[in-house]
Image 1 (tube, one colour):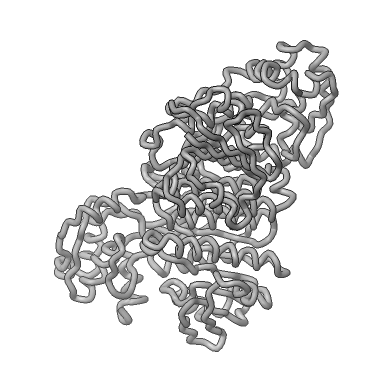
Image 2: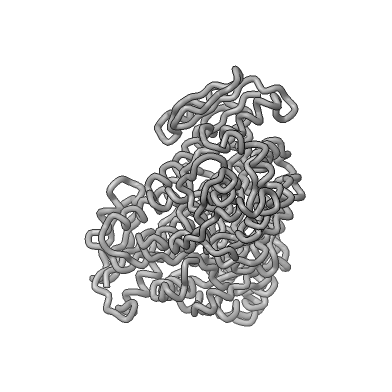
Length: 319
Length: 319
């Protein structure tokens, strides 16, 4: 079993690598090699892994990565939402052209690998139903969501034509994200948990009534693993699947923090209303009915309490 | 008012040109010039029109067409469904890369033209609801539908960013198409009307139970005109709109032919099952609830009888 991971140096790429190295097998077969590709060097941590600094947008790079063809490709490389909005050309170059370069290279090399593509619920745009059904239309309101939609469409058609065997998974917001606070509008969803657990104050820019859908990093990685092992016949031609999330209000997140870490920790959250962030967040989806993913065996976090515990077990020590 | 039409030599392009020349105005302003672009020479028929042979996929061509920037662009150029399926690279080059080349050229020239893009109900893929609502998801089952979906996504995002002012109209199958059969898998929907009206036999490759949604060429042209004149504030960010159609079975088409032209004409239809065409058509939508288009003022054909009469009035003499 040879595996290729693009975007391997990112938070999810590193966790996916650890998970694969830890289990040593995928699709019930021993892993012989994991190629890690990113524009910065990905940590390897195992003799199974080879890290390579490369930009799949550049001519010939994608084809080189497919000699020989991996059996499973996790395509995580991408420009994140904030940057895709501020730098339109970069988002198009990486999220659309880079993805297409990879898919076209796969088409030109013998073999039909399983390609797991990390899409996003940003393919949806307000106004929504509540919950949002699996067959809800795709009207993104960001360039990031648009670019993910284009990549999803290509993934499905390239799969239908037998050029590759793709599964796109639309990830909800990942929390609790490890690391430092960032300027992303969604940053507070993780910050109000992560910072108090570290004994630091955290600003809450929106009302406690705001509802949002979350998956822990650990669960997002299990979604990727499951997507790599799914029987494509069971999936059929609709290759892009909305992943389940734990749908909770900010108030419920805080109640979970009280239960897991105590009221003194939760008291470090400071209400600091920010109308600009509140307006952005008001356009985000709140709750999905992900019947299809559940039927296909994707297993979500059971509660936000579990999401906090996953952070404490997986990331708290390293921050 | 300066107008640009891509794909101007095609059936709809020629009819659109005639319609614009005939009325002499658009958006309540006199038309000064219509530039007709296609890879073959489009008939002009008026001093208003200039025909140019050009391929917008080639570097620099799209930018040249925008000197000076037209106020309205009808982007009709495209590879049809059958050809996009048999020649994947050509479909991607024209339907995706050609469209993006045009949109990017618009972005780089001063001015924000209204761009009317002829999309297709091929952006939808079975299984469907019945009827298919305006907020139904986009899961095309052909490369043509995929390519139209990609172009729609770009149109919406380029509009949101203010690069252009786009309206995508998802046309149902156009019938009765005048002229000779083309490479579209949907050709028989017109053929079974057009050929018998000309006293010729016509092959029916699918069952009479097949239901499909139709618009006459005349109505499709009025959809384009209306889309060019719509207030974008009324449309909002969801720039791609499913057009209404007359939803009838093949059997009901034939009954309409009997009513309009008599049983002897309809008797020229010969059942000639073609599993390849039947399989493609089985993935096509049957009936839509196009509430949004109706609210925005798009006016459909009232019946399939009317569609046949429109053919007799507009095209029968010239065939």
